[in-house]
Amino acid sequence: MRRTWLIGLTLVGLCGAVLVGVVWAVTYYKLECLNAKGAYKGACELGGGFTFDSLDGYCVSCGKWVHVTWDHKGGKASDPLGKVWVAETGKTMPVYTCPTCKGPFLPVTGDETVKDSKYAEGQKLGRNDRIMHCPRCGEPSLKMKVEVFSD
Ligand SMILES: [Zn+2]
Ligand SMILES: [Zn+2]
Image 1: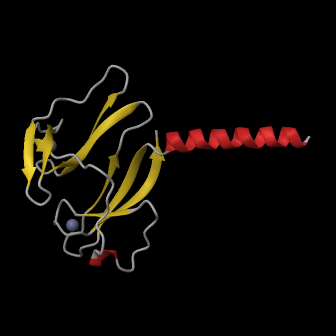
Image 2: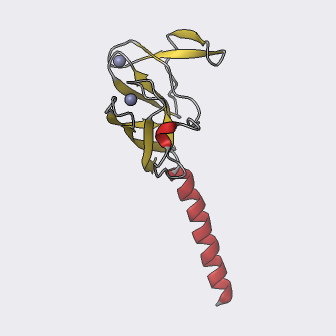
Image 3: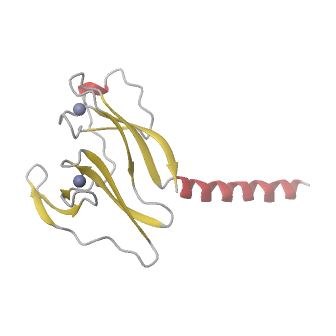
């Protein structure tokens, strides 16, 4: 009896691990600019899934978030439009083509959050929620609240 329980628990543990792996893929964020002058609200998806990869960014020309995906199997990222040097970081970053307007966008890389943003004060942020610079007003005021993790 005890042995059955142990096997059962191990199975639950294994399934849990697999589920977390799958669920931790694409992240859907609800966006809200906390800058009173900005009043921007939106949503975006960042990250690839279990079976696909993605390039995500914000197209300034369209005023929309871009989420380009391709399958792991047989697919690949489109070639970058070119590269730009970012003075603030000293890094050279590839820019890609927005599927809507064919203009350039710079992908979001990493999952860093703006630390010490005055806009974050008094905000109840979850462990995976983030503060980023707002693509509309440029302030470190974009609250990104995790809606769903999904494949
Ligand atoms: Zn565009
Ligand atoms: Zn804003």
